[in-house]
Length: 235
Image 1: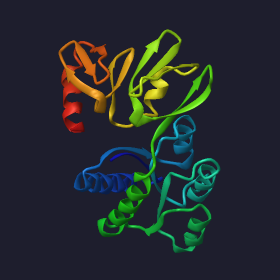
Image 2 (image 1 turned 60 degrees about the horizontal axis):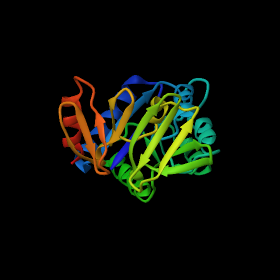
Image 3 (image 1 turned 60 degrees about the vertical axis):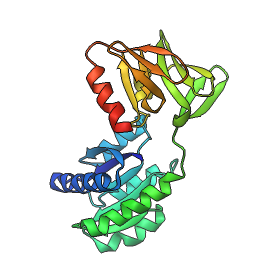
Image 4 (image 1 turned 135 degrees about the vertical axis):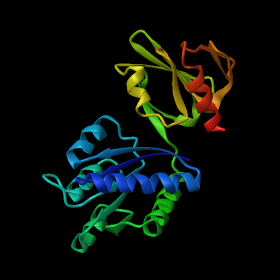
C-alpha cells in the first residue's frame, strides 16, 4: 500500500522518533510510504492547503500558536478521510479527539507496541478508499482514480492525462508539477514533460519507457537507473 504520512510536533526529537517508528512499521508491513515532518500546525496547514493527498497525520496537541485540535478542526471542514492520530503528553485533551473524529489518542512516548496497531487500523480504513485527483477540464471538474492513470503529459499550457480506459483528459491552469504532488509513489517523473504510472510500465530502455497501452515515452538522459530501481521496488 502506498501511504503519505505527516508528523506534526514542535519537538524535533519527537518528530524524528515518530518518523522512525512509522518507517519501521512500513517496512514490516511492506507498505511504501513517504513521511513529511512539520514543526508547527501552521507549517502543515501551509502544505496541506496546496496538497490534500496526505493519508495519515501523527499530530501533537499542545504547540505554540495553533494547537493540534484547532488544526484537526480545520482539516475536518472538508476532509473526513485523513486518519488523524493524536500523540501527546496530556490526558486532559482526550475528549477533543472525539470532536474531530480522531482515530486514536496516544500518550507520549508512543512505543511501537502502542503505535503500530493504530497504524494498522489506519491502513485498514484507507484500503477501501480509491485515491484520485481532480482535473479541471473544459467539460467540468472530473475525478480520476490514480489506478486508471497511465501517464501524464505536459502540452504547452495544458496537462494531458492518459488513462487505461483510453479516455484522455486535458486540464488547464494546473501544470504537471502541481499534479505530481497529488500522486502516490507509484508515479515517477521520467522527463520534463512526462510522469508515468510504474504499474502501467511494460518495459524500459535507456531512452524510452513503454506502457501497457502501447505508447512509447521519452526517458531523460541520466534517469534510467532511478526509474529502473523504482520499477523493481514497485514489483
